[in-house]
Image (cartoon, rainbow, N blue to C red; front, top):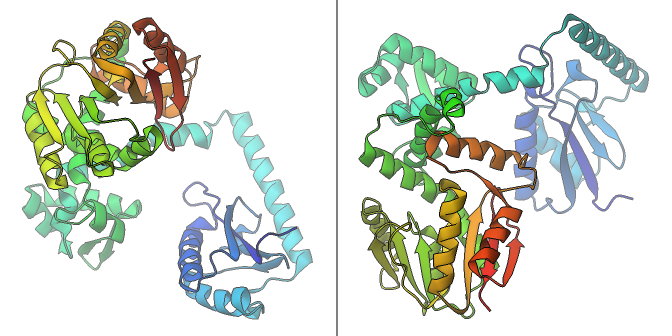
Length: 450
């Protein structure tokens, strides 16, 4: 049974650099072009496009298979895609010059490939060679550090519409030889291109990393650069059991942190509003609201709703800028203070703790929940959004790694499990506690006052 008119498979099996593979010969470009061509011809709902693992015909790649006929294409390039879509996927006639129909040769090549692969793996295992998966994980910091350094230097902005290493070095006040080495490394990870001696941004780097671009993410990503420096202290933090103090420019750090939180929260805020709804909510207390993204989303969803954001004095001026830009200042009040010490007030229908609890210890969270319970109106709710661990605290991976992020960045923070959040809420007096799963890495734990 085939629910689609055609089902197209494109090999995207990644292999070590220097090893023949479909991706090394351009299969991701073929995949991208296929998707765009299918959309432009309104065929996206008639043709299912699927990536697949190695088909054993690497020397003839990129390889593509079209079902239900089982037509195999070899050496497909992005320039061939429009013809395949028009002639085959729209017209029903395979593109003969690209079809490979020598079944015996195909099987022989695939069998030989499989035998060589198994022999190679057996030899590596016998020699005690580190598996590629482990080697790649251990070295994965290298491309990350290249990008973060480029962001810290604002290199992508300096590249602009095209510049030489000398011009870029002069612009960012860095050594031209070293800059060239970094630029070349960025080319190797597909974030720059080079024509002669001039470097240029790719569509991605121009969109997300250049100052002034509509979707520029640089300022928020600089918080990730700050995190990288924190993670370099992980060994000592494990020995101590808490974070290792490091020097930092507090003003710059706070600005980058709030920009980084805005980058994440802007996409997740509508999901939280949709999950919690606005029915029966007129007053919200947003603890540690940061950029105000969640309060802004609620205010935009319900014009008669009013929010109060409580955050540190150095954060509130930054919050004000985001709130004013969103045009909801009349619905959102800002209060400088410390959520661990200051009075919350009373009569709130909803209190939010979005990406906050992981910064605090178990004892601090228990006290926060107790005080939140007292500040809620009858039938009010406390909503905690965070990375939630399983009961064994071994996953999901993002939550487990983020717990280490809190080890290197806070005095006593961590990721916590659903069972822990539930127990804390019930101890604080919430009669009903439930979990709402959200798309992405974080979920909601909601406690209700009856």
